[in-house]
Length: 293
Image (cartoon, rainbow, N blue to C red; front, side, top):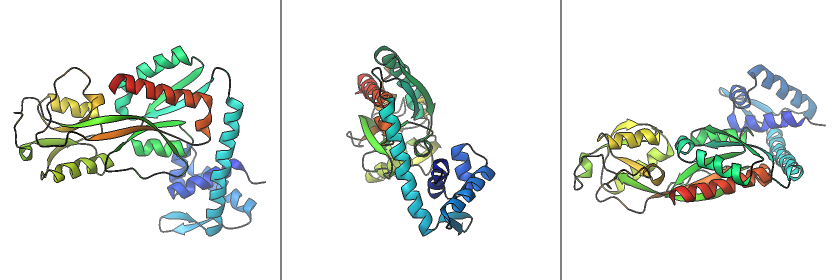
């Protein structure tokens, strides 16, 4: 019988393309990954992967087996979910969030879970969306909270399900002290990390308004973006979760007033049926809408 842990390594090899990347994602050594995949090939009796430049790619037999591996792993998670159903939804939940939500929403989330689902054992880590989704696919997280900007949908990942949490209004925001009727072409801007989906979205919005933005700062930290706005150093696209502190924020003239992003929880279909995971997603939705909607 094929070993389930080795099947998971094969599925991760298809996702990451190198044994080193699989080792990093799964917290193994590269030699251990290589050894276990070699044993899987012996068990299967066929070649499962081959060299492709500096990486590896699965053979046709490896692709078929990786498909079955994903199905087996999902079925096992569903079985665990059935066994994990308890009257009080007890269980551990590993939650990943984008950094902004760690300090804006997580304290209230923990308070709500403690009151309504005290047997949920929550651990929280911060990740940028791409890394968090990779960890979710590698079964190192149970939930990843991430975002998607209107007009720039993220690539849908097979093996994941999205649970909508809230719509978050985004405003092109003037730096403090800048006249409200300023020409947007004269502004300095702060965008998210170069090459990120959020950066591409912001650039497209500016260009739709006939503005080629003068981007002076790049950072994925929305709190730092807000600080640059309040310091009068840069304009930024700030979501409502960053404009709920009581300060006054003025919109960039001529920019759309209906910009938004969707916050959602990504879960694997199997683990997403666990009572503790369902309770956490429901509490997340309630917390975010109570704070920011």
